[in-house]
Length: 282
Image 1 (cartoon, rainbow, N blue to C red):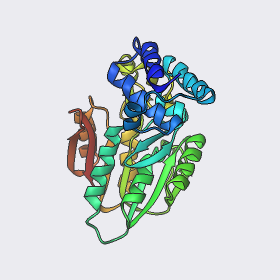
Image 2 (cartoon, rainbow, N blue to C red):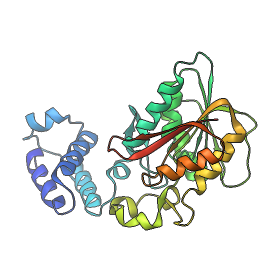
Image 3 (cartoon, rainbow, N blue to C red):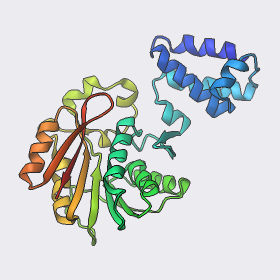
């Protein structure tokens, strides 16, 4: 089977599950990963015959896509802020909105000539912590996660990207204190309420770790409130707290931070126009 014929087959098998633009994105990503072909190659070498071994791999990937497994988990990696990160079902798949949060942090601290100490709470794959360490030359980065498997993945990603991050396994909801203070604390904690599950696509709902996604409806800011308390105790004077937030709870998150004594609170929309991140100063 050649590239052209496989693409026709690929599209026909996925057309009932995904929009065409998404299928095309899957196809280009898969052939690049498995066959080493660029986008241009797909069009200029579409008569190229695929070996039986490679064809078996492609059919296996296609079958997993038909089962609505995320392409990032199938291929075992994804790109975030220009870096490559290994991912599996133990960690959330990094998203473009979180890249915007990273960009905001970098722009907020990169004019400092001093060493910047950063704490990432709920690090998952380590995408925030590692991207900040790589992008802020004067940074000293720590990262916490409750999951031992997530910490293992994050450590591997730090090695992959030649980043120097101190990883700590801990449940932030328990009483815990690092024996140091920070200039920046950032977190993208669980924030999807149970009532919002109906809005979540099957490929996310059935594959990504619920521990990192969902909170109870009756206490949706549980992590934000606790992390804000940690920040009050461990941020340096004029230190910055950054959150990725639930788009429906921007007002409530801002009010909670005000009540805890934070100032200069700024709510920011993501590229889709949703309230998605917040910055506050101690």
